[in-house]
Amino acid sequence: LPWQAPKKLPLGFSTLGCPTWPWPRILDFAAEHQFASIELRGILTNMDLTKVPELAPEHIGDVKRQLTAHGLSVSCLGASAQMHDMDPVKHAAQLDEARRFIDLAHALGAPYVRVFGNEYVAGVPRDEILAHIGGALHELGDYARGKDVTVIIESHGDFTDSPALLEILQKADSPNVALLWDAHHTFVSGKEQPEDTVRQLGRYIRHTHLKDSVAAGNDRRYVLTGTGDVPVKRQIAALAKIGYRGFYSFEWEKRWHPDIEDPEVAFAQYANVAAGYLRSANVQ
Image 1 (cartoon, rainbow, N blue to C red):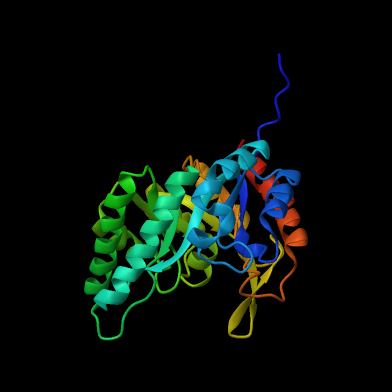
Image 2: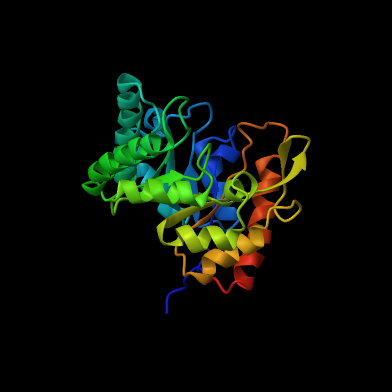
């Protein structure tokens, strides 16, 4: 029989964590440390992936070949689009960005595009803003369906509690709209235990962000996986228990917090620790 590379665990990282790495470095590091996927959230100084030179239409074929050669897939494209804006012109611009990302995801063969809720709007009743966000997601879901892409809203910003997210997803009412579970935010901001979040939202979860932190005054400081007080191991176990089939993506917010450990350290440490957590949860 021909030699086959051992199957990789479903681990990934977001490029948010390596803002100084050029594209070849991202691919090489991911392959070297046995990651199965990369999540694209900016390359170097460019946060708009639709304007990254390497991802221009004429280079997509090369990029797909490079990914295959490194044994990698693109798990998700991270847009900045937010669905809450009540101003029609601003709202249209946010939807336009999301559609551009959906087009790029389709070209790359990436299954998901992340968008944000992201906020309650002063003076707008809760029900109205949730319906507004749900309606915007439904519209994007209709567009994404024709591209074989699913739009995933992240548990982020003002929407880190299961009841609000569930209401938004039900209002979106689309097979092409689902959830990106940022497991850190539902625990830290939403004050939910991972098992409770997964019980309420598990059927919608398609992609996951993991990271660890400790309290630092009134804020949080990101720390290496397993060294803080976020129950990352339990988060992974809760997903494994419901048969989650997505990637476990490390979102190290180096771009926003330049003083935290460099990706060479944090990514490698996550690969080791999370692999142990996955094996404990019987994830192959």
